[in-house]
Image (cartoon, rainbow, N blue to C red; front, side):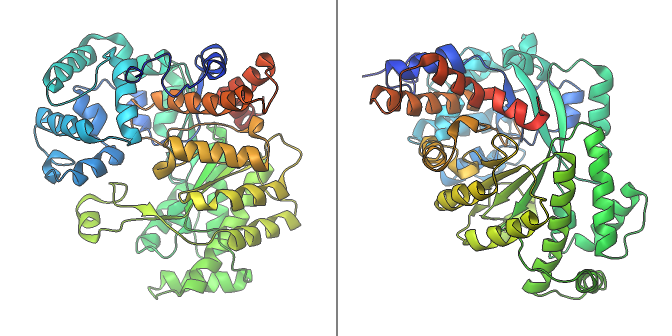
Length: 468
């Protein structure tokens, strides 16, 4: 029997996998190109007061498990005592067999706090006290210390086009952060015309762009102006939350009329909504292509399923799920239209439904060229970032394209304690590839394959986003 999460053996089932991980992947820097860290906390070099604050303060992965345990919401997102919340989390971990969060939790205990024991209700108080003492006194556990410790080269935050990026400017001016902090352009509020908040957002964007927005053409102009500002501030990627790619093509005149109808308070039908999204997303994709900015499409999620809890807590609080909308035909229509004007940008395709992987991987192959790995099958995302999901994504990409050009893992996280997820991914990657070599399915050229592991762990992302 192997020891629980032994550093030498965890997720590494043969000697070749261990060689690839320990000699080529383990110590590579981290380019966390998509996350939800709060720039203000980075600018202020935040130090958390308790492990409860750091672990449970914004992590809906953990909240979902605690709800499944039946804990009162006060212990999850409410105002219960930090120790009581931690004790509930310890009880959750004690029973979370097979869940990747169990692995992440223990990797974080090891890598951040040097605590190498399973968390349970018996030792919870001792672990709680030890972790809190280290938060208080260990200089490696403020934000800058964490980034330095984990060799974080860059993080891509998620920012609205109307944001003035003041904290990004402060981080630049201070020059103290050991990692690059790069804004990512997330225009969902301007694209999702079906939302009741859309009309109220338009003047906010107009003010940020210093112009009036009277129609859809003005909306695109304002968005492109803000994109140029983001690029000046270091932006290398956009990010878009879509159920499926928009694919209803109408004239500019028709789309302007749809915009006006919405601003007058009328309800839009599904075709009108998609026509507006298609126009705006098409024009944005063209602008991204001209500027060499990568477009990330996050597809097939269904959000805010619990209306009372949405009204109480808002979005991104653990009440979302994987959708089952067919992706292929819509995505092809969107990309085919862009390709007609040679305007397909660098693109990363994610889906919250692993059943989409094969279609996405084969579709993107039709638009490769000019740039190594221009079209990417995104890392197993959200509900799929467990071992089975990562292995399936890795194998699908290898079966249909060039795994060696993959830009690798991202945390997609709001927590500074998530960097050990990169280790988790690297172990799984090296085990998959090491097993192929052990089985005689690829030459045992360690320098060649090891270089691929280093590239997927870091180098490919650096080249892809920075062009270096």
